[in-house]
Length: 299
Image 1: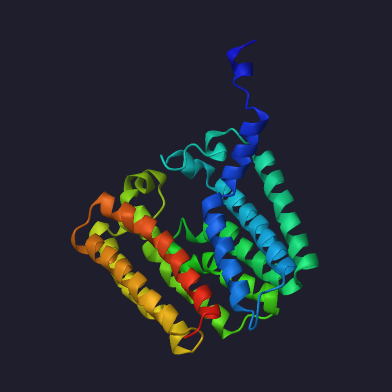
Image 2: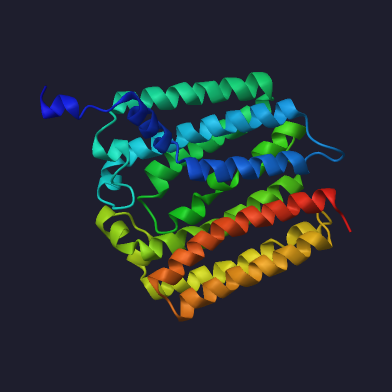
């Protein structure tokens, strides 16, 4: 048996390759925010378990399909970056047909689950999010402008609205406030990553802010957005969507976020940027967790 034959991917490895295409950690955070939206949309008691189950499943499937298409469209770019070079699409281990087939299968399943088992509004909103991220952001915005993550951030900010729509069959102002929080959170979260991965992005040819405008300019904007985020997260309390429990939590979480933003601006190091990026993920989970806790324990 030749070495070429013996190196053929095993079934388990192939499944793992498909799994990685869905960017599972990002997808899990998106589904988490969507589920929080489902609970916050319920005025009394808990949302129907079937809605939570099938809503989360459908959103996960369509998000996974969007990320798979993203990996396919950016395969050449990913191959130039150390962070993404091992993705199966970048390494040529999954063909275009295989990736499209996988994305189509889970995307179609997600559409059916949301339309048939949740409601059409959630399906259409989630499908629009898929198009916005997989096509408009990936093909048009990302290679065109260093403000790509700001403009395209709306797609990534949609999960709370999707979850709210799944339960209420409506997307009121409160749901859009949650979308706004993630929208403002996205630039400092992603720019922290782009700063310590700046060499990767320079090789990729993508016009990321640290590459096009320099590290100091980007650091200043991370700090500014941290302050903007702190103000934005006060809105649920201001409109009486949340009470003092959420407010206290938001103030503490934002103090840490602003501190990281200040350190990036005044005392930058790659280690600080890495820690800020890691904290931004924890921050969002804790902030939405505080909203959920406040929803059921008001004082």
